[in-house]
Image (cartoon, rainbow, N blue to C red; front, side, top):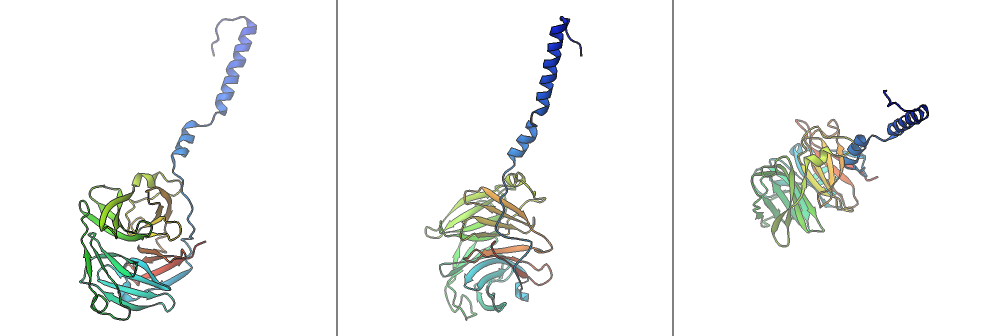
Length: 298
């Protein structure tokens, strides 16, 4: 280090000041690292142990490809599978299908929701069907009950694979798996049941998922199921392709992003809650029997 020509006492003071400045600069935190840490979005823990189900149910052959799931009545769930226009009522205690409701022709059905005494079914193009079921009768529409069709004009061409219900908004939720308009981002649409109107709600953004702290998705997260938590009102979005569960609020803020074990859930497509907060996730069998997993709240 070349110092300017100064009297000896001044040179000593200058050296001391340089050394002191170096010491303080070495103690400064890494601002770049801190900035990166601060930019990560918080990833809150969810109140379920998704690696350890409390109960497993093996489903019959007709439910090998479960694509939609809903709470129906105490101890019973409603299910649909990809190709059949049938709602199957599954009893958790007897572990059997106890009722069937046929509502139309074969098609690509991706969701079911039981709301105020009516069953609503979602087709992958966004069309909805609904009727009031009559238990114990396996004829079309539950014994001659009229089948209602709701033609929803979603913007652009969409592949819709998630159906839920938000009681606070009195609206059905339609989650898009593919959206031509938004690209990799996945909007959730609200269908107001009272006013029969549609509007766009929160958007599942891939950049926000990539910015979440902790585990990162390795694939684009495409919703395959959707349910609203009965106590918190948060939206639980299931993704079969990415083996992931994402929790967000109705404003679109992502609260949690949790990886699912593909060995435990081969192809998770159906999700619902019972009123006490018990979580159910159904998986397609992928050539084997479909199955249902139950997760009790912590």
